[in-house]
Length: 175
Image (cartoon, rainbow, N blue to C red; front, top):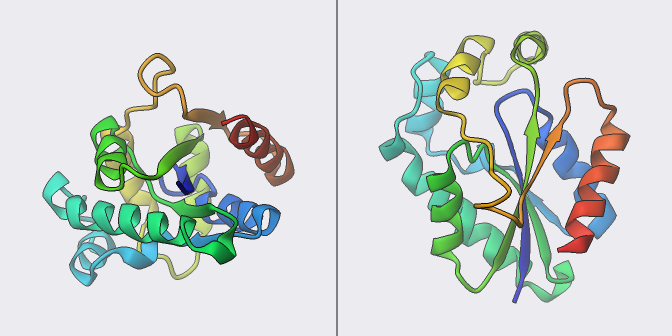
């Protein structure tokens, strides 16, 4: 049974950066969840149109299936890393339900709103603009320990990449 670490959170929290660090630590594949969006989703977000639940289901299924397959690949030591916003509990449940043979651990990166706005304004060439951060905050459901005990929230607002990575690794290794 494979293990998938989902680096979750809103735009600008550092999912890709932390995912890359974990890929190197675990010598595992890192799947950039943004690359799995269909073009229609990318077009909507690039035009400041928030995605609906219906827009997300196919993408979330790809997140689940591709990361599960990767985690069960012998060359990946039984672990895969994937980035995915996973903003709602029902999205996290859907990912788990699509690949029940795989253990999914969500490392949820949280950041203060004002800091996220500044971070996303500085990004070059990304379709997810600062103006879309509010729509993500509007639907954000952070994992609750009593409902999702295998998940962790890391406040990344004022932490270094090294500290965030170390905290994530310590949590993952206990699972």
